[in-house]
Image (cartoon, rainbow, N blue to C red; front, side, top):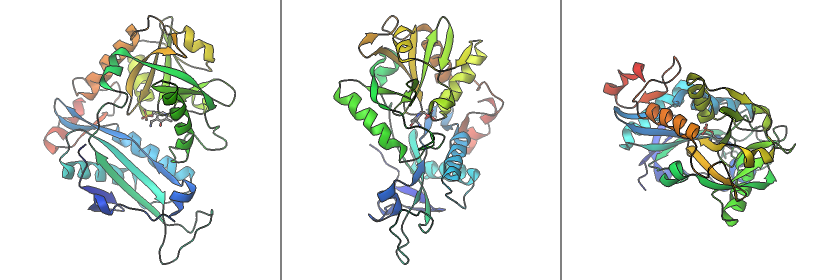
Length: 321
Ligand code: PMP
């Protein structure tokens, strides 16, 4: 795997190996971090980051929820990302910004109270392929409904992409893997479908697209939003509503969305075949538009472009993407 030699830290570029935290840093002991997962694609018109501004806005929102004051704005994080990718020489990569509570070695504090801990901001990047595998995008994956509930948003706010939330995701993912599934779907604390360990979920029912609302303890996914906008443009009706577990078995099509998973069809849930057991027609149609957009072959279905080009030459052409 190719890794960027540099990491951005608090406004400076440092060596990858120097981007370390102390074992007694607040984040290590109490999970106090917020982060993002962003992708830079090698498009037909050069490398471009997908929905950079929206991801950085979610990072800022996550930090706000946890009262993590950072001197950097959304635009600072966007500019730093473009510069980091430029310096890394990577053509397509995964970008990981993290804001965390560290340790002031001159004035250490080891308690739960987060306020004395300094806030550090980082951005790292590395080359990364498809999360659930190239084959998964076409053939689909087998998933289970998790015995673990999705964290309830009044305990750990799911509007924030916080490191601590991923302890819940890890329980869901480990159970799924050990059971021979690619992914686990968690139900919310009321028993309605919430999301995967790192993906939002959509069902297709009689030509309509159905997905859990933000109130179902989901992360407001940027791929989820992209799919909703693409579907709307295609004239597909979208319903955000509570979904029972059994509706997953009876749906015509089910798919997952996420920065890493992109749009991944689900071919079975709890070993019950979904629809035809293959990627469905609507899933394929939405995938086609999504992949055209991330390959800069067509504009986004919104006024604001979805691609930020790394190379200034290509950047001039951003308006059409
Ligand atoms: N839910 C969870 C729990 C996630 O970790 C992710 C990945 N960030 C998603 C949904 C999908 O969000 P996005 O499309 O913004 O990557």
